[in-house]
Length: 464
Image 1 (tube, one colour):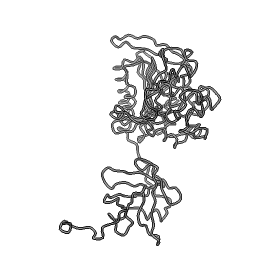
Image 2: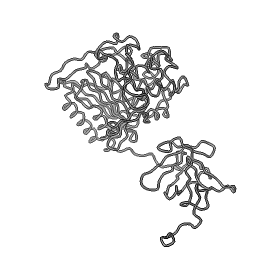
Image 3: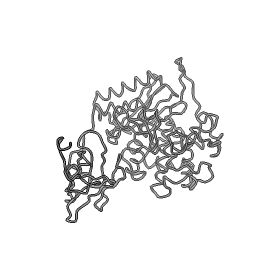
């Protein structure tokens, strides 16, 4: 894989190198390797290591832990897009007999099923998967620490069930499904369930001494779909480009946007950190920037894949230590460095090729009661409606082909916008989920709910 280092300015490249050098040194990581993706292309690669005269390149494998969950979520959403299952389907419909059958596919994807975080002991990441040969061994007594659908509670058990669901519906092992449906189509030649040389060894670094201990490398068996994969910065850079831009051979852009939409109620701690979860992707607001991706942690390895959505910049950071290094923070810093130093150049503004006169008639100022709003017709074929100034409810709307529009985000997501016309064809008002928008504040000539005082607007003397 080529990495066009000249794609970034020299000062930006040095800032990136400095950030990972500080991270590896202060985090006491045996090695750290990173990559940055911009506009779908790898534009920088860097590495730091404790081994004299050698540094890992973009083809050295590291274990990526729970980034595996995003691969599993892609498999499940492919099944949804094919019509094989629905996100609201109970698990029992497709995978009977688990004892967790009432939980839905969406709840499993978003960690809101209420299931336990881990399987019953011993510690599954440091013991062979042969100790948990069946789903019952992973699920244990199914004591649910949280009510289903009520809150976000991260669950490796839940993603084990999703892996079993994929196997049941595809009729092949999860390993075969993820290889044939995601890894191979995206050209991730150095990604797989088992390490292939060159691969980094996993280490535990003593918290109070500069010494190391090798970590065991176990096959997770039934729990592979929660954290088994090995990969490289080169392959994860390609995977990040896919998550940002889509690939119709795997998943389209609309489904990937759905993955990036918050699906889990956030607890107080999550709210304080600006973090939530979508469908197989972590979502975070950091320094005013929306970041999506996933982190990974298994004994001996730390990993992070982070995408700055608005900037179309992604970063991958991999390290071979159990703890001590905040790889997610490093990855978000790499995104910030590039986005701030070399901000994205917007596409040129272009006018619409054509416009419907009935739509253009609606453009301009409207009032919801006394609150001034503007409706704009944009070059992407949508309309937007929002306050003229300050905060408040705003949304883009997509046309439905019948003179109505459906809201795409925020308070108005899924709500219907329509123009209500008088018998002569002129527009009386806009109706948005029963809210009335008129051309003038409480327009006496429009059908305002509750009517308008016939005496009209008045000053203080007339109000006495």
